[in-house]
Image (cartoon, rainbow, N blue to C red; front, side):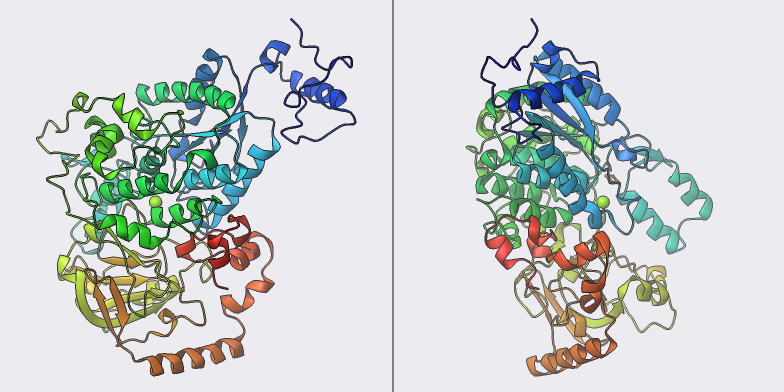
Length: 610
Ligand code: FES
Ligand code: MG
């Protein structure tokens, strides 16, 4: 029967008129509905279709984004799920970010994507939304925007790519990109081999096939309760991925009816679960920044989750998942071993099982519905991808956060200790070799005359949120070629930048306040200063006395003001998004989000300190 609810004799339902959604009004409520219907009918929808719950599907397909190449098939499967459950699915685009094709960095655009996502969810008449993301910055951007918009959302990731093969072994983006490039730099691999390898590192659509940022965030979405528990690991090109998409559509219809919104689902407990999983998977250091940004969007959680929380949870959480870069295997192996349900079963004693999930059930109820015995925990080779709690890959603290010492005042500096290649460096003293930004690094790192040895500490500054807007993944400072040629594979490295989640080494990241801040200690370290790093003590310091540091900082402040060209000084004059970014971005410990996007709470008050 035709829907005649714009008949003037009947009172109009606030939802149908779009009043609850705050859609634009065209005169009276009946006329507003009449107008919107006539336009949407131009898409060919019937009155019957338009009377159903409307599920928006965020389409992040882009021909520049191979990690999202399967999005069209996923949308089709989500629509099937929505329609089988009695809803109407309507997809709409937002921007898409790929790690390699978003200059200057994808992180620079993460906050823009979160704003796009938030405002499009808010603007359009959707009852619930499926957020299709995958590549590193997309899922955090979508969750940040989704929490702020606070309409019912459910995540669907594109899924990991398959591994490739090379010279009898498996390879995958992008841990093997880096390790083989390092071999090539050291002269251990020739140009024909490195070129052949280029064809095999990303052999299918999907996100990087190791425990990089994309895989990490997919696992964290499950732990947070924002994605069903099976949905993190199926490969992008698998039929399982399409079935996950179909069931996501059906959950989205349920959400449209229950109106369960992210600020209701997510509590501090959800974040503690996410951090437990982050430590157990040896996840990406980037996830620490993203989790802070996500938590600080939530009015009831903001300020209660900090990098110190990540460290604290780490002290009692072992590393269980044996994936590159901390271990040896690929996401397809993690999936074959049972994926997230199997890991969560193993982690049961450490989890808050009462935390709610997007299905309307608690994490505990979800786990109870998936018996642990269904999983084969071993690979055919005999390797165990998901270790039991009693036999971990690394006892505790895969990710550590430095909290003591004059180089760790912001409490943001993080290291993936489990991915250290030379464990002696976890307690180390050495002379600083300082680089001012990526250009200086590129110019001098391979200079045969560079005064550096294997015990030196390589310091890179000027790659923080403001100093190099977007905080690039420059933290994996290469081993100077002359040392690499001598067989040096790891050195202690420190920066205010980030590092790809797929990279390994003894590397301290996210030092805050960043070097560009005129008051920072990082900004005044000089070549030859002695740096002390003690992971056990969470200590990161430069052995220069207080008075001398104060003198250096004052002197630098005067120089910066005289020169008048430093980023920190000129950011008020920058135009466009770059100007907005430089003026509003807060430091890593708050998530490198824009101050005006954070929830009104301690996270906002503390943001940036600028
Ligand atoms: Fe997209 Fe690695 S480049 S997940
Ligand atoms: Mg990455």
